[in-house]
Image (cartoon, rainbow, N blue to C red; front, side, top):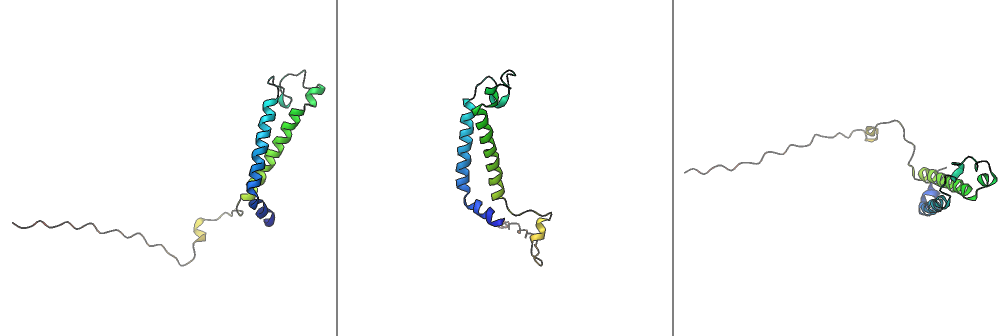
Length: 117
């Protein structure tokens, strides 16, 4: 599984370009739909169960592009993720025997003495 993750991590620019292309195509398909609320089968009830409402090409393309967008988003997030985190403290990673000393407090600056007259 790590080899698949490493392969996808190496191809992240290609995945990102495909992701942006799918996003642009989905935006275009959504904007091409009718503005009467007919997109994705919502809106008018008389057109919901008609042949045109069920087999609307733009609605199907929107659903396909949305599925591809969702899949690519999850794939890219999984490929760049680090190792699984365990419920530990950050102090568990400090090597044994190393102690941190408190910071040294600097001495106050010396005040020059006034000359005697």
